[in-house]
Amino acid sequence: MIPKRLCVMWAAMARTPSNRLRQMALTAGAAFFSLLIASPILAQSSPPDAAPLPSFEVASVKRSSPGESDSFRILPNRFTVRDYLIKALLAIVYGKDLGEFGLSELRLNQIVGGPKWIYSDGFTYEGYDIDAKVDDSLAEKFGKDCGNLFDSGSCGYRHEMMLMLQSLLADRFKLKVRWETRQDPVYALVIAHDGPKFLHTTFALPPPPCPAEMYCFQHYTSMARMADWLWGGADFPVIDQTGLQGGYYINLQWPRNPSVAGTHIAPQFASKAAMFAALPQQLGLELEPTQGPEEFLVIDHIERPSEN
View 1 (cartoon, rainbow, N blue to C red):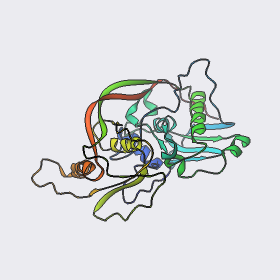
View 2 (view 1 turned 90 degrees about the vertical axis):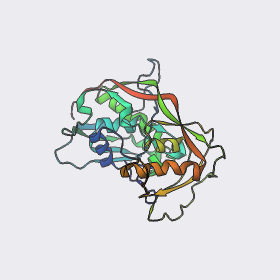
View 3 (view 1 turned 180 degrees about the horizontal axis):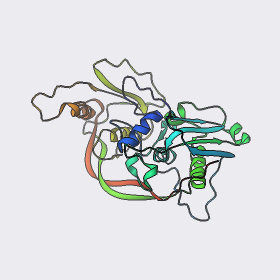
View 4 (view 1 turned 45 degrees about the horizontal axis):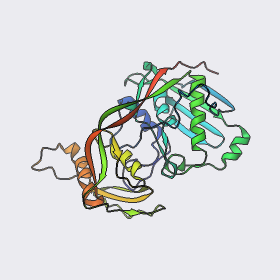
């Protein structure tokens, strides 16, 4: 999606470029320390008497041309993607709207079922181009372009646009999905015994310089969003059980190349281990292994669309 900008850190709390989503699809898993999460804006399997989803005025859907560059763009009056894997699109469309803290996308391993053509096995890739127009009166109501805030901050038209995209997939791809909750091993994000060590604030603060030898996570965020981000580096999902509401300024730093001498930690995992070690020391937060609910988007039906 929209490029992210977090100090020297990898994209974690804002939008991920579309080519990274494609790589996620090709590797059938989330990239290291990526951020994207897990709850529906609205379940597609709504009751029969539910109000119909809002829809685009007109939409064009077709297979991508070979060698086409992928892109993703949402404006108040138009939605345009090029060479996008359907599973990657579902991860965005069925993400969770976190208000001022942005849009949190599904992880690809939370989307189950469906035919092979919506995935990628590393050898085949079936991308789609979609160009959908918003009705002029609705676009005027949406107002100015949210830009990067569409998924990294507050955007007035984000929720309705996500519903319109769900409607498009149901209409053109005959998509039918449902949500399934499973009790799985998870990590609970909790407050350490000596309490939290970060600032409660109602607005973003300018991040301090990040030392060249360190990784930095410096962001105004919620604890739920923090748990989302930590999920990217953990073996299991991370759920927020801190009980802390509202926004906080988080400044977490850990070495890029920590020493692994005298340990059993492989060098490629040393930085990850150092990050988790820094949590209680710098933030007063801990991860506790437990059992908890994890939501999965189950694809019951989907068809290749007829092009127009």
